[in-house]
Length: 269
Image (cartoon, rainbow, N blue to C red):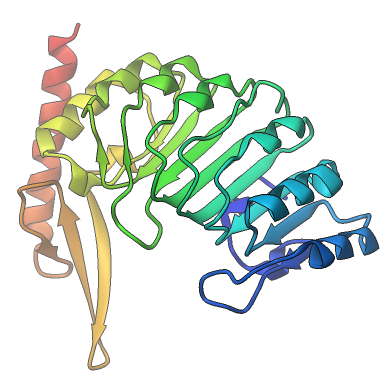
């Protein structure tokens, strides 16, 4: 499985799927986990319904078999540290957890290239990401339930991450400019979380950066009574624009953004 593909939740994309039918992820026990031994060739796994005991059993018995694991709705897992014993693990995706307050020491995960963490209600620090020696892609935030908060992005300045995506509610120290001190070359952030001036200043500090951070708007399409309407959602404090009607206003808005980026860039030297 390639980088970015591991984030998809379709069981058909994985060599092996142990996914329960219940909406909350259900429960997976050791007997279901033991069926993995019937598929020794499988290298990618999506699994739901693990509690802490089942999580540890899975990692201890079969963890080293997999290069990619998607932990889909395992809300009762509280300690992720067993993952530190998987040196060949390349991609890890988490969706929905209500217990884990921290990530894990990734120093021995020497092959880990991609990590995605979505909808973790108790996780507020990404400090452990700095311990991953080969991590290229890190994404964290809200996928379904809005409300994820993290203390700071500063640990990324000490990491190997080159592509970072943040889709959460709030960074508590509000310091996004620290990312200019990192090795990030691609940055995905929601324009609606920033004022236009803030987003322009961040772009000025990170010349050559790619990603959604370079575009001060996003598009949202709604369908009502069979009619499709697309809106341009702008930065904080700016009214949304209607696609197909407000193109001139969007053009003026983008020109304002470009002027601000150039101005801030000239001010910083």
